[in-house]
Image (cartoon, rainbow, N blue to C red; front, side):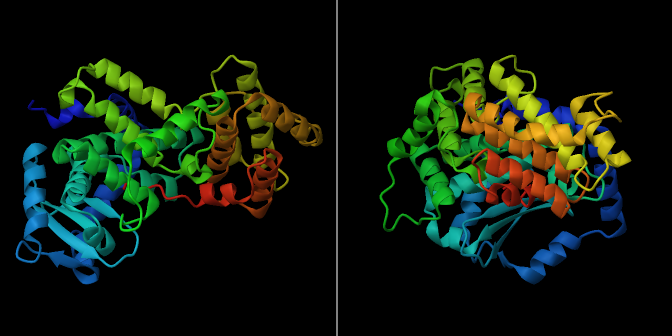
Length: 400
């Protein structure tokens, strides 16, 4: 079956991307990037040529051949330049085109540790980011730049980036056309193992997702905490999402596009538990804790600044800031609020609260020791540990 690359793109990726590209801050940052590129063009290629090895067709004929085949499958028309850089960590990346050329970089360990089918998936995945114009949403610039987004925009960026990875995975699977190779590639990327000492088993890898779904009927329980603070979906979830894709009409299966997207949304719900609009007792307890902790973070240095107040109201709604807050009473209530959340909410939901608070704290552009102390108090109170705070505040925000 011939499939158009755009047809297999994740629906949520498309919807969220469109909304983000219309956001005033995203537009402003893109204008700033365009101006900087106009004033100082061609800096990326110069940097790549001076820091990496350009792989010519004579140096890497097999890699160029599979890249050309992926280009054809995804109906791209941009010339490629392939580069290798020294790194023990499996990694690859694709950059926004410059001078009409698209640049794809590969870690040396990945080129040496992946077989042809696995490499084909990686190449297709990176080209998928270009095919779907994911770099038009400059997530790294926005989340790390001087003009910080309000927390709701930050949350939307994190959610979109995960669906963007799902789309890119589908592009890679479309190019590789071999679920076993695709799964092995994701296993290697997740584990760092080359496969020389460990025998990969697809069903055992997928069982990890099933365990996440059924463990005490608490979705998300058991997933590594650091994966909740990443822009990327937890790797077994990505494999499960690709199994659904492989069973869909796009790969010769029986499931319709609607069934595929519904299944993926259910999976991604393990990484994005929603409580801001929920009506359950757990959701209410989570909102109460989020509100109190956010007040304490914003007032950690003694008073709420105008910028903090603006950020707070963007997140909680107009009129949320009150001048007569009893900070001491709110602080005294925090332990009880944490206890209620611990009783009513899953570990996954508790982690989501902490992540959201870290985004609130980081949205102003920096975090003070006093703000970090509040965040770490919350982490300890929920039994999550201090390290998850540091991981969230310093997490990578780039597409892979």
